[in-house]
Length: 164
Image (cartoon, rainbow, N blue to C red; front, side):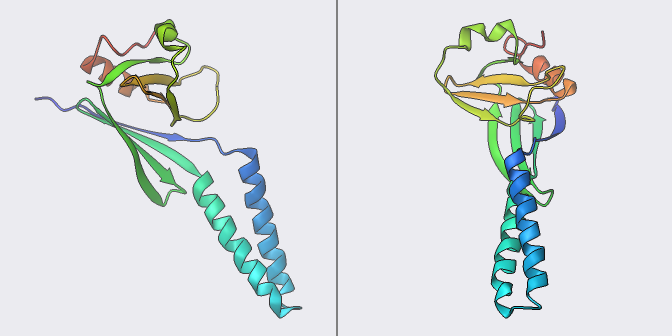
């Protein structure tokens, strides 16, 4: 049996609000540190702001890693390049369709009420390389796979995977 292994890493876009909070908390931490020399009570705001900035950075600096191995797609979330968490595992046998986000193959699925999970870059780029996967009739998964991954998935499930 031939195992196909493809790996893809995608950096998710950080929102402007998250960047604002991260910078604001860092400024508060630095100002509290400088104020600590004048007032001894400035240690508490400095500590709170520094811990807050760490956690905001941890949960906003996201990357998604897709691993395809023999009819199974695994999505991992990498937080701040230091922590990894398995988000989901999808098998190609249970997948309904996998096509580009603007594909006509998805027209029959547009009016479904499903849970949407976005593991992509989070924005539309030119050209739009995002793909949509409908999984078991209840999930709509948005991904940014590499062309090699799409090709490997198409070889495993040619009637379900489209590359238009």
